[in-house]
Image (cartoon, rainbow, N blue to C red):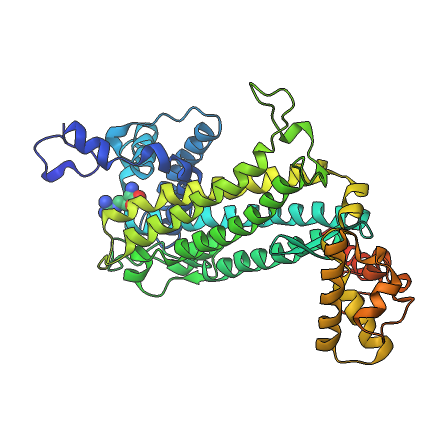
Length: 459
Ligand code: ARG
């Protein structure tokens, strides 16, 4: 039998293979509630402007609400022959209210319908992701508040550079996440125009009220060009880009959790809840969740590339190619959600090894830059010259296999006689961190202030 939704000109039913390649119900089922929402708005408008009677409109809406309940209760049955979510719902409506269901599709097409569904879905998801980022930031900030003066090594080139505080390090990710959140918020602004009523591509001759449907669905206004409304997927590209950027940012933190929790670093302990053992090596406690956050970021880039490639060179207006936008979008959304949830869990449960961080802060001649700064302050030489002197001190310490603060003052003086002999007593790891009071610097005083600000702002 030919398709009952559009089978008029078809004598034969589609081949099985055609059905498989063409159907999208196994993934666009995710848009079921948004599709109902869009259809209710459309039916309401059709009644208000008397394209159908108020009574018909009400009957259609009652039927749609019944289907909504079926979807919510998991009782909604779908079939591949009906291709996609739009036709599955319309067909069910037909079963419930009979031929009147055929009036719902007046003045609209699946093309504006699907574009509207996606936008409704995106809006919900972006709001949810933004909430998750907020929770992630809050969890980081609370830890920053707790460990605002916990000293740890700061790295450049993954080599011990200068000591910092753990709180400062965590707050770096809070700042980064804030920009991610801002990018999602930007997406929402451009998302705020409704495609519904663009119909197949040209608009419609029915006296529909697109401003009404836009407003019912919570959009600021309808999209101004019917071709653009049904054929553009740039907002998906934008959201996928923002998701990819966020995922990459998360993957950097995940990598640090992997490093920090290794036996070699031993800066933190991740809880049992987010680690796993090895089936062969009994001693292992693997940071699987962090590794997966790191790895899954790749999927988000994959999805972005998928959609870029689908859209490249597509003429206006709708082409079936666009059906391929959804799996990429859904996968990216799932990925960013689970990554954020996993990080929230890991950060909430992790325990820093304060002694190890503190002692590691002395490694790698991390006080060298501060000695140079002290020479500038105490004997008034240019920084470049001080840098050179301390470089020689490092070479000496390396030769003697010792730390800078264990160097013999008599030997130090041979490098440059202007070096004050109490220089080392002036510099301690604690002081080095304490005196980084420049705006945005790592001094505990600064970090405490920032952490408090963030906790307040995020709650
Ligand atoms: N399932 C389709 C999609 O996701 C809906 C639009 C179909 N439109 C059409 N003209 N065949 O893109």
